[in-house]
Image (tube, rainbow, N blue to C red; front, side, top):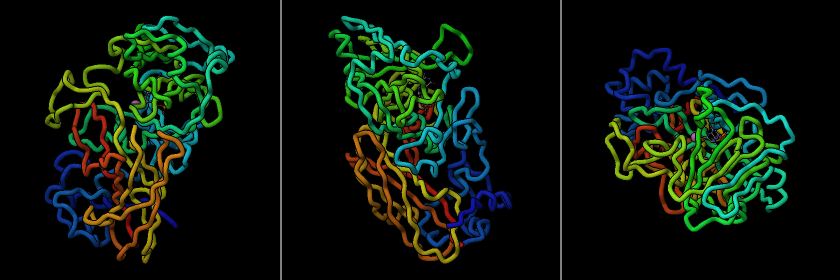
Length: 433
Ligand SMILES: Nc1nc2c(c(=O)[nH]1)N[C@H]1C(S)=C(S)[C@@H](COP(=O)(O)O)O[C@H]1N2
Ligand SMILES: [Mo]
């Protein structure tokens, strides 16, 4: 199928036709009529009668076309969100592999990228201390030989994935849905290492430390240092990883040792891991407390100030889906009447129960096939097809449902100052003909 990204260009031809959106890119559209939108697209909107009033068409609401691109050895042309620190997102159509290849893995750094550990990686040292009877100081080689090695496919998703959907806009990297990877990690279980150190009764939380310098270069400040409740640390899928996709971990992604905490905010998965400490109270490192990786327990007014004192730390990430075989803004040939669709879906600690697709702005939904995960915490493949009644402008909406029946909402919900947990229904605009 020959595809072209054209919708943004069509809009660029005649932007005056539109009044500005009331809020940000996904706010309601004031003034512009559907007829005007249709005229700008040069296409009919077959389901315009089902379009909710005030909804900004995805073709205008979501960027497509010109975006800054990461150019880096060993990395695919990801969408560059920031250079200092280096942050890059994976376009949805690059998330089609069941196991995310290293070059397509999104990048999220909070500080500088440390110099590559030049010595034999087996000599890298890792410490486990705090509320334990026997603090451990082990080399990577000792970790691998003392504890059982396991290999698992594990999702890793930034807590801010989907942030660009918040209205009004929030602080932080404006991710679409591409701050997600599903690599094959090999490592030892964190719980085995904790047990070997003899945790004390009071060991109820962890704190994580890595070797990357703070962005300012200050040696007394951590780039990021987060922690989690012991229950998550003791889960069998939480790994101290030494290999990714059967290879040493790439430098950008934590060589030679990193923590992998699947299903919870990616910030817990400390790269360039040097130390984990067990604590009686929640860790107080960089990225803990206030509004960092924390969500309102009771909704707050969007756009309002809040110090986060009553918020709760984010735990499991919410359910989400990506469409990987068709880019938002694609044009398909006239008379195309059936379209194959596929992608991935995941839901933090939960399994995905269903994925549905709508062509008519959510009036009717078609159930897609969803594969079981190869192991818990892997994302799942979904696939199916939809029939198109005619040529014209369509939006493919994709919505996943988790095992508890929770669905992706129509709009980013539970607004919070740093924009975490946005998992709105995916919308891809296509033009047929
Ligand atoms: N040492 C260290 N670990 C880190 C970070 C960091 O900046 N430094 N960023 C965290 C965040 S916010 C995320 S989302 C993931 C991103 O992992 P990746 O860059 O390998 O995709 O790493 C986490 N671990
Ligand atoms: Mo993140």
